[in-house]
Image 1 (spheres, rainbow, N blue to C red):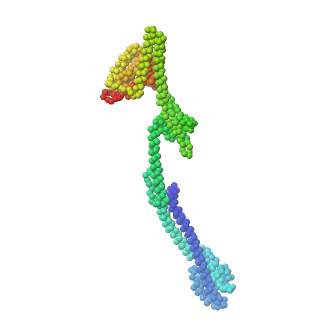
Image 2: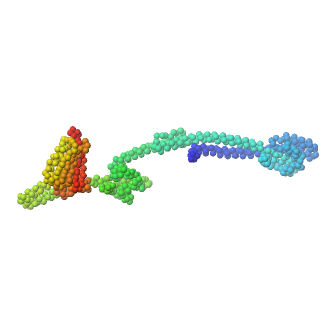
Image 3: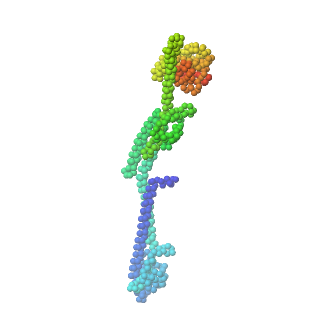
Length: 610
């Protein structure tokens, strides 16, 4: 691994390539130079030998002529030895003079002196005595020594007087060539060393800016845009460094703008009253804001990566129809975990288009219209209830007035009865309108509380006294229980009296004869007062508890209306308690009784309050 990383370095590659180029170039030059030098040396050596032999033939020819004429052989041999020694200027060369009969007359070799006067059987000599010059070229003996052989005939005019036979060693020549090769190798090594040094310097000047750019690129990848590449030259690498620095600045600006836009978008999405969900082209959720999780009741769930069809409880086919169709709005209904309360959500689908790629995703905008639907339903029910509540007494009054007009007025007893009924129905309408006006003032924040110091225990006892007749009539016992010391509080006594009257009146209405009512007051802590009214009446079904405080809502509509109720008492009680910054609650079991309790914040005289 280390070796592979070593060779992955551009600097090492440049040095190796540079050295290899120089090495190959020097090798080619060296081989050519040595080969040329060797050929030149051999040619010069051969030419020198041939010149030597030519010169010898000219000097030796007169002596061989004398030898053929029968002159003194010993004197001629002595003179030949002198001539040969004087002309033998080639080191380690042996020269032999052969007469026309093949007899060796003279030699420069001491070890071959014994062969003088004997017949020579050398092939080259035989051919030379035939008048043929022989240059055998380079030859190698049994010891591996290289030598050159030349045999040249002596004489002219077609008459051969003898021959010059020369054997010259070439070891000195090849030794010189070896010395030149050694010098060339040494020069090559020195050149390679200098090449490596220059290659390192050159590669360093090239790779250092690249390393700097690489570090800058890594820093950018890690989010650091403050570093700059040092520009040390104006060549291509310097221009690359300038371009990289410019790119870094532009990228920094672009990312800064992107982050700013992202923060704006995130802030917008976080503060939107509508939910926003974005998906990819496969329907997987890639962006979701907090409001979407609230609407879909998935606050604790990470919705990224989920299918939008699964989240919205729709099929992908339906979603595709709304994304690509003319109608892009749909009202969906989601049930909670207990399948008791449903949410109505209006979803608007919009496709995400990307240039050249078509639709790459979907944006779904979720608007919770549950409360709007509830308000609309309540409004319709309210209008229907008000119309019904007013129509019934008006119809009664009209029918009785028509009866009086038809002659019943002449009958004193019947006319008084009819007038009494009309009066009761009129008072019922007045109570209804009064209650509606009361609620309207609370809805429009126009209700004014006249708070005063009030003794809670005395107020409860007065409530019990006001209903003593109805309690005695139905034989219902009423108990007022006080736990601990209850201080006097600042509150609107008339309003709280109205709440207590309404709650006690309902308890009496729906409690059978012989029942019991308890009014309990206590302070669960120093800052709050708790008042509860419990009865042993018929109770309220669980399904009706959630809407018991709605306007005109009655558990048993016919029975409640017969008892004179308008269906607004508990609604008014809730608004009064809310105006006092309190809360009201109800608990009930069928045939076991009902407990309605409210908690008021403790506010004493001198403290600020509404």
